[in-house]
Image (tube, rainbow, N blue to C red; front, side, top):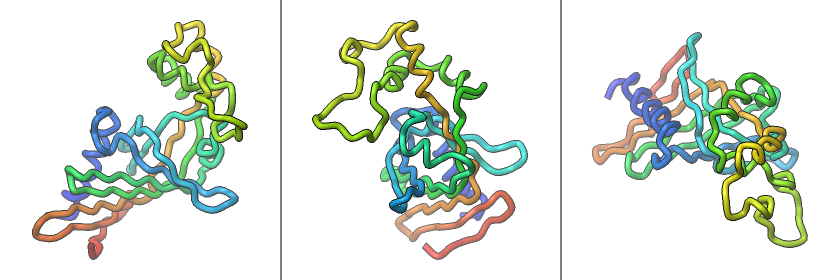
Length: 194
């Protein structure tokens, strides 16, 4: 396998996953730093692209009140982890995230979003808010249906887009004959021992 071929294999699956809900990479582990140390959670990959000036970008949608959004502001250092058992492929990503809130990008994505997806942003409580009893955090009148357009509008106040500018990608491909592993930056590529 060639060095650039391994990157192509890994990145192709990430891009595919951003468009296919059933791809194993469609949900990824996203880690940030908090006052308590690293925090990781699963996010839904909504965006993966190569940048015109070189490099890569990843993204997901979030509630602006959530810890992951708060911890992703101002070029915050973050990591992503993708793993696919069927592909025998792991992709690790390091980068810096920014939050897009009530700007052109956020508005464009909100306007293209399905009404059922908008329902999540109508939650009366901020994600991770401590409660005395279990709650779905979905308004009672919408628990068994998607909102109509007018009902979904207030959710935009809670909606944001998180984008990560990637500084490094590491790809690990497992094969019967052995594994291939390498790391990539926008300016370099290096083999690593698996």
